[in-house]
Image (cartoon, rainbow, N blue to C red; front, side, top):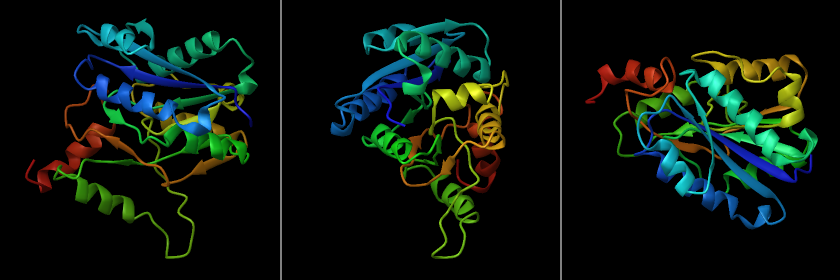
Amino acid sequence: MNATTVAVVVPAHDEEQLLPAALAALARAARHPDLAAVRVLTVVVADACRDRTEAVARDAGALVVGTECRNPGRARAAGVRHALERSRTEPSAVWIATTDADSVVPSGWLAHQLARAREGWQAVVGTVTLPHSSPLAAPHLALYETTRPPTGTPWRHPHVHGANLGFDADAYLDAGGFPPLTTGEDRALVHALERRGHRVLRTAACPVLTSPRLRPRAHGGFGYFLSEMAPSTDV
């Protein structure tokens, strides 16, 4: 795939505090030299926000979609729809990346995804890391390591995180898009892509730094996974 447009979709519910760092990181990733000939759009889906999330997003130059669904699956789907409408090109030329408002992507994140797309991958499923200062960082990494195969075998990890996900728009539409789930919409999409025979790369090559908070905005998501580990730590 040779994408001419990359659209990054960021769902957000009352994220005025953490969203600036997320958007600053996305801006750095969009300036990567490998994206010089690519148009990059950032779409923030302000879902049932009662703070300054929308204003923060607009001030950073992002496109904003307002929703009241309080549903990550519907919010991500609304963001993708808006991105495709604003791309002004065919879906076959659009790569969609998703991350979260409490996450900070590395500067080479978008370039990494596009490089994999040019190799023929239709979706890239990445991993996440926690700040080293968090007492949950070590147990989280240890749980990741339990799924790693013996040395020398490629790690096609089983994890799916909406904070580190990318796919070509044609494959997304063929798979039916994000389902309207309150949790697990990212996993459901990836499983649908695999069932439809699309080439899905599960890689730990370009992890995204995400928040270790135990009271996440999305019920039942990664934060709840972390909260299950918290009793064994000093958190």
